[in-house]
Every structure is written in C-alpha cells, then in structure tokens.
Image 1 (spheres, rainbow, N blue to C red):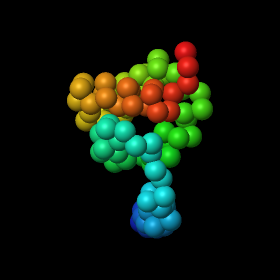
Image 2 (image 1 turned 60 degrees about the vertical axis):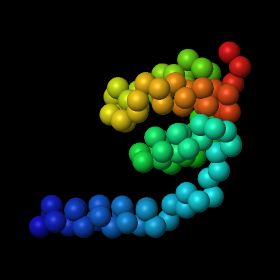
Image 3 (image 1 turned 90 degrees about the horizontal axis):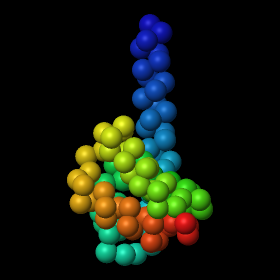
Image 4 (image 1 turned 180 degrees about the vertical axis):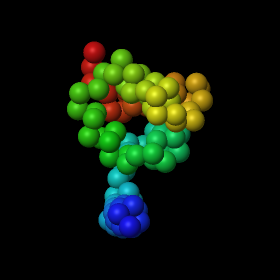
Length: 97
C-alpha cells in the first residue's frame, strides 16, 4: 500500500511539475548552433540552466559540463555536436578566461 501511495504521489508531482514549467519563455541567444543546443539539451533539463550557469562558466568549465552530460549522464550527443555545443556556449554564455 505504501509503495502504491508513493508511486501515485510521485506521478502527481511529475504531472504538476510538467504542467507548471513554461519553457516557451526561455530564449537562448540566436546563433547557427541554437537548434543543436535545443535538440541536445532540452530533452533532459530546462534550457534556463544555460542562462543561470553562464555567469561563471569559462571554456574549460563548459567543456567539462558537456563531457559530463555525455560520459556520466548518458546524453546521446555526437562528438561533432559536442564541439558545436561548447563553441556556442562559450561564445554566447561564457566568461573570459
């Protein structure tokens, strides 16, 4: 019974969280790679993470973050797209080294 109740509670939280999140208001800076970023990143997390983290991310940090998403979290991102993601993130949201 407790397991069923926990599953119902988790399902309700998931449904509520999905209904509340409004990704349409999140706008990444326009560039040729923005579709690659959206396609590869938004399936797992909100795109506002990019904007929130950009205040302190240098190239090495963005590279490590993209590598972590692929190697640790299992994001299916090709090597070519990883490079495009990092280049975009550094150029549009990175801070100087």
